[in-house]
Length: 447
Ligand SMILES: *[C@@H]1O[C@H](CO)[C@@H](O)[C@H](O)[C@H]1NC(C)=O
Ligand SMILES: *[C@@H]1O[C@H](CO)[C@@H](O)[C@H](O)[C@H]1NC(C)=O
Ligand SMILES: *[C@@H]1O[C@H](CO)[C@@H](O)[C@H](O)[C@H]1NC(C)=O
Ligand SMILES: *[C@@H]1O[C@H](CO)[C@@H](O)[C@H](O)[C@H]1NC(C)=O
Ligand SMILES: *[C@@H]1O[C@H](CO)[C@@H](O)[C@H](O)[C@H]1NC(C)=O
Ligand SMILES: *[C@@H]1O[C@H](CO)[C@@H](O)[C@H](O)[C@H]1NC(C)=O
Ligand SMILES: *[C@@H]1O[C@H](CO)[C@@H](O)[C@H](O)[C@H]1NC(C)=O
Ligand SMILES: *[C@@H]1O[C@H](CO)[C@@H](O)[C@H](O)[C@H]1NC(C)=O
Image (cartoon, rainbow, N blue to C red; front, side):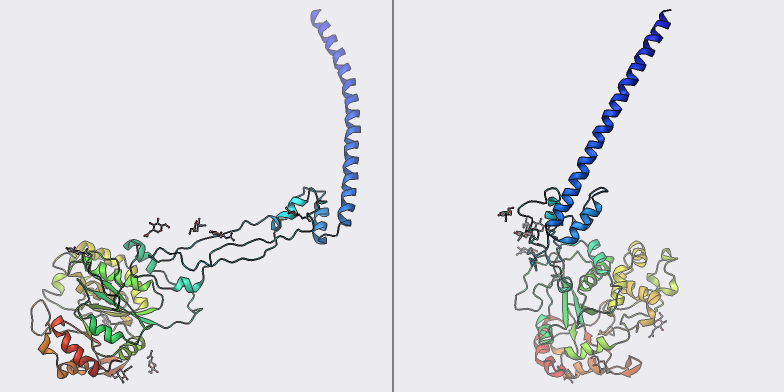
């Protein structure tokens, strides 16, 4: 009974609620209609009002077209923030360079969007607002500018940076190719005064890099062409892999300058045998690279090979040669990028293997022999025997001796036989400097 009562009570309540709901629905219907009508009225009024205002017509059309759907400004209307970016180039000096600020009057669209809601603003005619564009200009010229010789890149960073090659070969700028003269020394470049005479008047056609022992702390006078040309260096032990690392470091530093097209490795005891223009033409015009490479049986040749280098390097591929090379940019890029062969040398070419006499000759003979001449342009005399070549002192320097070095042999150059086979010579001591300075400029026709 109790349940029945409750049901009836519930039914009564439900029917009552139904009636009530119907009334509310009717009310809702009317109120919705009212809101709709008012909205329509406002919309129509607004549209006419906006049309009467003669401001930028096409914008208005956009608004009225989209006013029925969700009103959102086209993406192009969103305000662009003033953007600025800084690119720090490979310069170790602390100045920010070439910071041009460009002030451009730009049409700012931010006002347009704000005015959607209150188009009747008295300021609506001043929609076009000037904006200041503030950014640091990064031109190609700045990108191409050679960095300082001294920098704060680690070897790993430097080698990666140096190994970059543009895929587009046609240059968008004029380029005068340069020769990079790379000096691998213990301390100062001992024969610097002679080199200074050699370089004089040829600015823009060469660059130079000096890798001396990190402990070398003498300052190079500002009047010297070698001033500011020391690169960040590491300890070097003659005959060990640190020597190859130093050569790669020199190459990498020189590669960062895009205009360096030939790369010459020199020691502190090297001298030039011709004037700058002859050496420049010889190197630039050569179709071959100059990395000495020969196959030598016996103790100081095959004897230095380790069977552990297999399979990357077989005994038949093992080569020997002078470390003093003259190469082009593409081979230089290959050398700084080589990991495959250098890692083998690092592991298995331990004293007394002398990687500086084997790494490049072997690498070049395996992979890049087609364009290599297998000879070096640096003259040296091993004829007296022993582990070190002849050294030249004051009295050795004569005109006859010079001409023997300059024209004393015959060899192949660009498919022809020539008697100019060496452009540089070693090993000259500082004792020879006086006489070198007296004879050389005349014989070699320096500027
Ligand atoms: C640009 O460099 C300046 C200082 O020279 C610095 O205040 C600003 O935050 C840098 N801007 C960017 C985007 O790195
Ligand atoms: C470069 O300048 C910043 C301040 O602009 C300074 O903190 C920093 O030590 C400077 N670095 C060098 C190497 O002078
Ligand atoms: C427009 O607004 C700016 C400030 O936003 C005000 O300085 C200026 O007087 C206004 N111009 C007119 C015509 O009202
Ligand atoms: C441009 O930006 C620099 C800082 O990056 C600031 O010192 C300078 O005042 C800005 N110039 C303008 C016109 O905004
Ligand atoms: C250079 O190094 C030597 C030791 O190698 C030291 O006696 C000398 O004070 C250093 N000179 C400078 C300017 O640092
Ligand atoms: C290369 O040799 C040609 C003649 O064979 C000469 O005309 C040209 O000037 C030389 N190039 C350079 C860079 O000296
Ligand atoms: C250089 O040596 C390689 C073998 O190591 C040989 O194939 C090549 O023909 C040689 N090049 C010249 C110019 O003699
Ligand atoms: C360089 O030497 C050659 C001869 O070896 C000579 O013909 C040429 O004029 C010299 N160049 C300069 C710039 O003196």
